Every structure is written in structure tokens, then in C-alpha cells.
Image 1 (cartoon, rainbow, N blue to C red):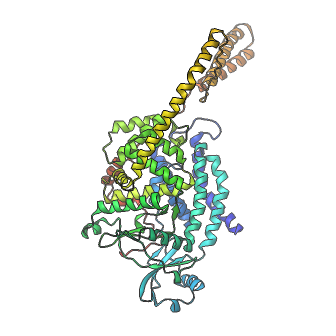
Image 2: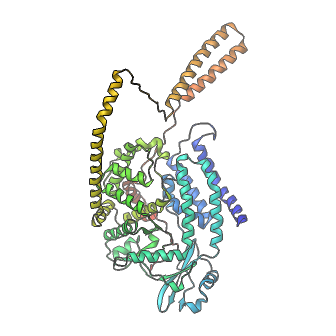
Image 3: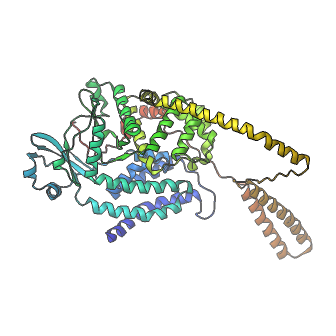
Length: 572
């Protein structure tokens, strides 16, 4: 294992090192000194494409890593997110003879355990492959872990861990938190995805939560034919959710389907606390009567009660368009730094809400907000704790699927209706009243305590025994910079006088030394006045820009989704 990991480390380094060097030069033009380089969106997109090719070359583990990175805007710029969202996890299935060994090691003879078994896989991906079979007259889908994948994944996970300290050297301090949580999340997620017993338990639990919902269908697990490396499920055919032409031909109401999808995830995250975490189009299908089918529960997760409460607070604040409450909820969840500029973040949230509601956003308004954040775009105070990373993935991918079904879909309206129906908004009103009552009580106590303290302070002023101590906070180092410039200016003035005196009274070498000192101080003073070039960004992900890209791209919105058929199946 160690030898394989060492070899993989060298292979990975060969692919990633040129990009890391380029990124280091972006921060310091000459590595050690020099200002940062301005990197254009076109340059970032070119690098993203190179990195995408490297991930595909490195194989299953890194394909999965790229898919997780595609949902982490706190780690990568928009161009990388957009390119990585195209990652396809389709690889040729392993030979049947190798797959048969896995089945027979886990279940026994294929001929004895199955009535029929089709030896050609209906889907093949990096971690597993799916076959059609029949058990007791019932059609089933048999999911088999890819032969030998465990050794490769464990070696690659060691490489990722070994690479983390090196990556920390090249990235900003503001991104180190997100990168560490990403590494933890990735190791946990990929191991869980290979454990088919866990997947079976999660699938069964979520299926039970929707047992009374006739708009949702989740396959049933065949316990007698399932182990840690083999999962046998009821076979449920359907049309892929992004096959718009087939849905329209079947008379499916796409707006209603999008609402069913969002409501299902609101129930999973807010009410149930356990959710399907990989809702890309390859894992969602639609039956002829409009029933929504979920496949592949390998990537699934749980939400703890605290996060559930904060998500409810967040949605309630969004429904009321209460920007301060939105920011408070984000801070309490740990996704926003408490030191964030609330004015700037408030403007960003206001723009995001308008976009989510499908409102047309005036371009000057977008540019105005971008101007506010352009100097700190890579140090933006958003971050993703590990317990929220999968939730963000779900929100991002579900939004993409819903927009594909209905480009004017009102996410906030559907969420508001759901919260109101479940009684959460009423609870929010009660909490608001309780909070205001607490504030009134605190204000009353303060009104009683303040007069004696004020009288004491005035007495000290009258006795001339009142002193004020002030500390100057200079977090941006402006005072130090001004002092440095003042000293350099004074030194430059003195050296100019000295050089002029030497020129008239002393020898040429002495004058040369004076000139050299003057030039050096002049350069130092000039350098202190240089400012870093602002990083300018263009709006990438407003719904308005997505529509414009859709009109320009012949493939439409569907081109943005990777056809990740990892262990999913459909009836197309």
C-alpha cells in the first residue's frame, strides 16, 4: 500500500505542480517579491480545463474529488466550478469474469442465487457497476463494487493527505479552512460511498420517510442479496429528469415536477434530518404518471438538529427578505465570518434573493455590488463547515435541475409555502415576539441602572478626576505605512542635500555613493506608494447570465450537468 501511495504521489505531483507554481506566481510575481499578477477569466478557464484533464487521467478517486470540488465555491473560482460541473463519471465496466468473482465471494454462485442474470452492465462508473437480474420472479438491479477499487482509493487518499501541507503553502490563509474541511469530507464521503450496507440502510430509512407520498418512488432493498460489496434493489425504470423532450411528449408538468423535487429535499433536510446527497440528473428519473424516482444513495448524509433550526431561520429570513436575519443565520451556522462587512454582504444577499426569485437584475446594480467586493473577492468571508458541505451540494444541484425543468421556477416561493404549511413561519413569529419581549425587559433594567452610573461619572468630571484612555486600532496597517513613508521622505531629503554637498566639495566616488543612496531611497518611497491591482470579476452565476449562456450554447442548460451514471440506472 505504501509503495503504491508513494508512486501515486509522484504521478499526482507531476500533474499538479505546474498549476501550483502558476498560482504561486499569481500571488507574488517573482515568487518572493513583486506584486500579484492579474489573472483574467480566460486564463483561469484555461487552467481549469488543464486541471480537469489531469483529474480524468488520474482516475476514479480524483474524478470523485473533482465532482465534490464543483460544489465548493469557497475553494475554487467560478471558472473552475463551471468546468468541473461537466465531469462525467462514466468508465467502461470491468470484465464480467472479474465482477462475477465479487458476487460469488459475497453471495455464492450466481446461477444458484439468481433466476436470471444479464452479464452486460447497464451502467459503469469509477466505484461500481450495475447489472439487471431476476430474483423470485422480480426484476432487480444488482450494484457491484468495482474489483480492486479499495486498494486504489486508499492509496489515493494517502496522497491527498500527504499533499495537504504542500497545498497550504500555495493557497491563501482565507482558503485553508475550506481546504481542510474538504479533505475531511472527501475521505469520509468516498469511503461511505463504497460501503453498500450503509447505502442500503440510508435508502431504507429515506424510503420509509416517504412511504405516504405517492409522488415519490424509492427502490426497495433486497436484503437477502445485499452485502458490503453487493447491493440488490427493486428495478424501477423511468425517464431521466433532464430529458425534456420525452417529459413533454409524455405530458409531464415540469413546473410541478420541479416543485415536487424541491419539496422532497426540504422535507429530507428540515424535517427528516437524513437526505439523498447526489441529485444530479443521472440519479433522478420520472415515471409515466409523473412520479419522481430516486436512485443511488451512496452519497447521502445527516443534518443535526442545530443546523436544521438554523436552516429554518435562514429560509424564514429569506421569505421575509430580512437581510440582517439572513446574515445572523449564516454566522450562527458557521458559513459566514463574524468579521464580515455586513453592508457588503447585505448587498450580495439582496442580489442573490432577487436572482432566486427570477427577477431581472439591472446590469448597473450587479456591477455596483461587484465593485464593492472586487478587492477582496478571493478573501470573501464565506466558508463551509464539514456538516454543511453536502447540504450545499444538494442545494446547488437541485437548483440546476429545477432551472432545467422550469427556467422561471420560484425557489423562495416554494420554500416559503412549505415552511408555512409545516408551521415553521408561525413559530418564527412566536420567536420574534419572545425576542422583542426580552429586549424590552433588558431595556427596562438598563433604564434603572444607567442614572446612578451617569451621576457618578458627572461627579468625577466636576472633581477634574475624569480620564479617557483610547487605543488606536490600525488593522490595515495604515499608521505603520504613513510612518514608513514619513521616515523615507525625511531620509531622502537629507540624502539629496548630502549628495549635492558632496558633488561640490568632495570626490566623484563619494558623490557616487550619495547618488546610489538617493536612488535607493527614491525607489523605496515609490514602491511604498504602489497599490495592488484590484481583481475584477464578472457575474457568472446569476440566472440572467445562465439564460444568456443557454441561448448561445446549442446544448442548452443540460450541458452543464455531468452524466454521472455511477451505479444509477434508468429505463431509457
